[in-house]
Image 1 (tube, one colour):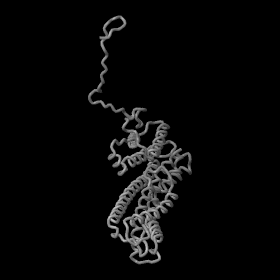
Image 2: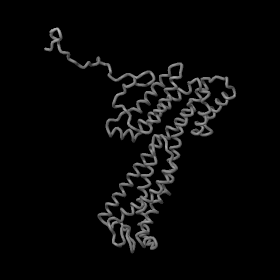
Image 3: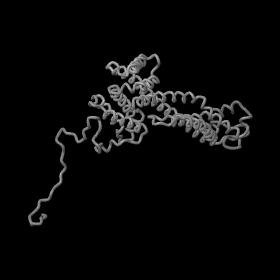
Image 4: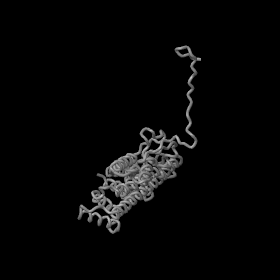
Length: 359
């Protein structure tokens, strides 16, 4: 046994872990505003890097500043909505399958935005300086709601009343009118965000199916070169000979994808960067390239069947034809580009409504 300086025996200190009493949780409790105490967030809930988390985090910081300016505590519904949004931002996914399912369903992102919007409506419409925010709110709500929407008309009437008599105070009915208009704009933006995700998922499925089709076509053509005849009377896509080769289909697919890549460059030039929840240009590019490869094979095969001597008379002519058919997918995907741009524009308006209420 160890001895102290006086020679007395000292009992060894045995360190044991202290278990919490039955029924008590070891998880740190949240503060009244929905935050966890600093440094007590569970390690598994550290956020993964995502663009939308930065935008949501910025919005959370702004809502926190609104709460700090209030003389009275925020409603319980606001606290719960902010806590829900914060939890969605910091939700940890320990397994790849969980992360993939959350990414596919948009559960974390859309839950965060809808919770934020619910909290924002309550905080903004109950703020003392709501009258000063009305012009910006009306402008952004008008972008989302049709002109004949009665909620927009009622919001305009409230704004005119306050503008005509600046000393008039906002009545409860006026605040309800503003809240209903903001909810309408946010609901449209949230629905558009869901539409963007659905479009992204459909484009991913369609592009994957086209990619698999191109791969199978290339494999079959490599094993049985004459299965897809792409040779003219004097040349083939992969060489000057007239005998079908296993590389003919792959060569046409590559040049078709290259032609589609030209359309992708135009798409990327016109796309506007931003902190959007769902980024569509990459998926649009995927669809364009895979569709361009498929159309190139179909187009060159059609020229061979039609026996267009000017086009199929040389290898260079065949490859140029593949390029042209690859770029021609832009005729079909242009409608997809316009639809995607329209959806993204509606989804972005929700963020504009949020900015309209800031001071």
